[in-house]
Image 1 (spheres, each protein chain N blue to C red):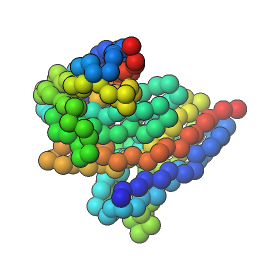
Image 2 (image 1 turned 45 degrees about the vertical axis):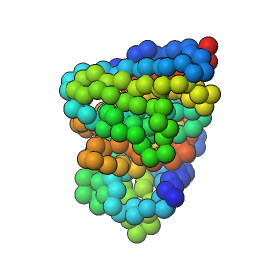
Image 3 (image 1 turned 135 degrees about the horizontal axis):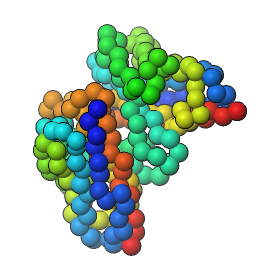
Length: 121
Length: 107
């Protein structure tokens, strides 16, 4: 069965850095685009970044562009999110999600359980 | 960016009720519209993709319709496990954007 397990969250001071990981299993990881999505406390879902199946293309939300870097290691079935220059407003639960495309329509068909990032002094 | 607006933001309903949630996109997204369910403290779960296709394992009381800019999620007969927040998402263009969510509460 498909499993996505995030790790690496925690408490960090403003301006600090954190690297999130998402370990994938139960599917051919190298064949799927992967996303990071976050949810601030009590708020809705916000897309953060996407990386294509082979890592050839990456796109970011304007709110994180230049500060966050998405990457993947297909030999380790792992997705990463390097977060630098963190701000208080980055506080959120971060989810990794697999991009499915049944019938050609993209969706996020599997999600991890999430990891909490708290940016506070 | 394409904006996605849901209504209502919350609703109260009883077991067995028919519930309808709407989602409107700021421009046409064809049928690139998905619906997710999120229970408190849990990750979102895909219910409907491509506006009207039921994800594997999702009960048939859930259905989706629409194309272009106006979409609907319908729960034909509300069950206890359906009390949750529902969210739409467009994947027609990058960035993919989510609606603000509709919280379905027990009346």
